[in-house]
Image 1 (cartoon, helix red, strand yellow):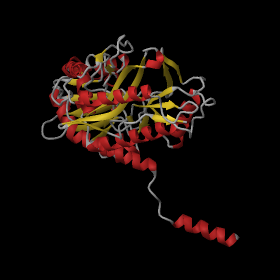
Image 2 (spheres, rainbow, N blue to C red):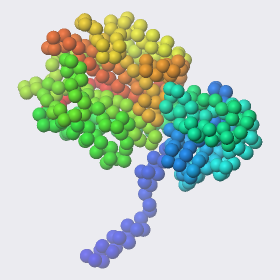
Image 3 (cartoon, rainbow, N blue to C red):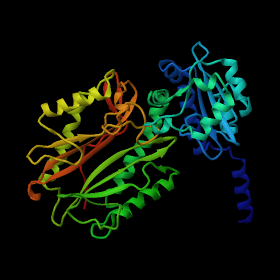
Image 4 (cartoon, rainbow, N blue to C red):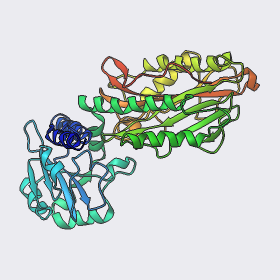
Length: 432
């Protein structure tokens, strides 16, 4: 037996090293970065009239785009500097950031100390220098007040007076997607859907025993199993009744007759998803949901085809929302504010088609009322967004009170229309 064990050990040591999951994920992120630097960044800078883009970082205080730009070890202060010197590419320099992952990425032309920034800027003499400052777009607002003062002091005049916000550049850089991003995001979204549907099943839920928070913690444990992150902190596992939401991710026990929803996102390879699924918990003797509940779900699904036709490339987001409202009204739906259904027999709809991608609520064109600046952006091809809406349908058993059915899937806008990045929702899940 001893000889056998030694033989097995020797053989295992001689086997070739198998590529690890960490390397696979890093290589996908590297490919995304290379394609975006080559194909997206030049247009983003030139469309916004920015000659140089500086992303400043401090040790333990990273810019929101740190992962997008390749990460890297920061000791003290560092800068990622992108210069438009003509031609078909943007010059890229890492002044301060270093390390294996950054060096091996092949994304940067120059590595130099942070102390060379002033000389580097002067040698290129940019007229407009974009920095990450924004009132409304979080990922474009990574520059702190002290770092801004440091930049101005370090560069001196005339360059200190040439700093401008890079918020629209950042939005364009992120929201114009390359193929590898679509693949990576689709993988993350597929995992989110798979886990959501497992959570809303008897694998996890025993009616009369399981609590809402136990379902949420089950989802968190599955993320730990696969080295994934949770996009919205604790998953929202909730029950909706005649008066609205009954409870969310609490100690409330799931009961027969409940209409349940899960709203959450998965983090993978610098992407964050945002999806929902809906389930009905059968009562004793039931083999299917009540016809009124199923009809409410079916009416919610029917909304999808109505609004899809109103969303097109080349139209501003705010104008698109007007087109969506008109399409809904023409189809017989009520158009309402969030959670304020009309007192009638119609199905009412409200929506929030926010961008998704590197975060569950990302930057880029937004078909929402709560991202007003982004609603002025023009919709473009390869824009990824949350196809999110809520349909409110009266339920006779509830005295005519309306059941809110949330539908949310992740989609992409193409020249030929909307396509989904995973299997979209078409069925009401059943828990026995």
